[in-house]
Image (cartoon, rainbow, N blue to C red; front, side, top):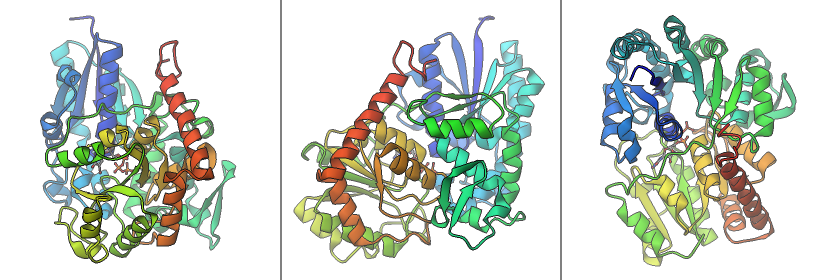
Length: 461
Ligand code: BUP
């Protein structure tokens, strides 16, 4: 069809980026069925998308892969996704991924030949901001899709831009553009604390910030009415239009093999009684911190479902070891039927949508935040890196939908079992503060729903 309009989506190779891009692809197709959507990634990621239990409408999206060799950059061959490497290697993957430019350009050339015209628009990850060069060459509109929140993105950009400002002994950093926003030293990710202008993160971020300002428009996975402050801040730091389109959340997948028992166990629990515990796809805490968390959970006498990943310093794909937890912890939880440990990948959105889930102890990755709040589930925050630290700050101070139990970098973060116990009880067992948090979460859930209703809501617009 010579009149069809074609959009190319290009996410970074991390689950927390690919998921919202897939959800965006689905949304675009649903709202504008004449649109033709192509999603581009590296071969392993395309294979994973094809073999995962995708929603049916994905069949109408063209998936195309471009070659990428992690080994050429000193990474293990399977490192086409952040989930396959420890956190400290992610910057190597970020830098290596810039070598995708010629292959991406060739792909757009091929697509243009096949379709008889170039794509209307390229929507790329902010880590692929360089793709604006390709869009310009083909006369396509270029947009960056931020899969992070507005406040987190604005704070992160501002902190980064003022690198010398952080070279003080002070524990508090007001941001030059936003003097009302004070960031505490414990809210600085390790790579920002260590950045000296010559390390790999500095190298990546320096290029990154100036590239982002070249895009034609930013779309962002947040909601105008929920992130008023964050969007005001972001519009101050970015020269282009900023359009919030959230919450863009993937449809629940069907149950994931090997984890069926989780949903069955949830089915048998009382409404809103279970705390879901997960630190996301790439963050972990230390083994002593896992013990502290376990003891806090046990003392709180709250039902929980904890997705265990190997602690800092252990092989990310390694087997679970009972020694990471207090002695006989798993047996006690099993005998009492109050706690379940899950390993590997779980159907998070189904868990958060389940009536038995009443709270989420989370690292506050932005997708997790949106998934939780759009399902009306309050958050106990334990942010560990990047924008997570600012997502938690914004949710606690501005939205009032979460309480922090700990924060810091993966190695330095210190939780105290007494604090875990107290906060979990507060959020899960209906104390005054818990009630207020639930009321606020319901409000935010309502705003998120309205943003996507006809009328049109702010995200539909
Ligand atoms: Br773990 C896990 N199942 O077991 P975030 C994650 N997810 O469905 P990220 C599962 O992955 P950063 C699991 O629902 C969400 O859509 C989850 O994204 C899904 O965190 C996504 O929350 C995880 O943004 O870290 O990517 O781990 O903060 O760096 O984005």
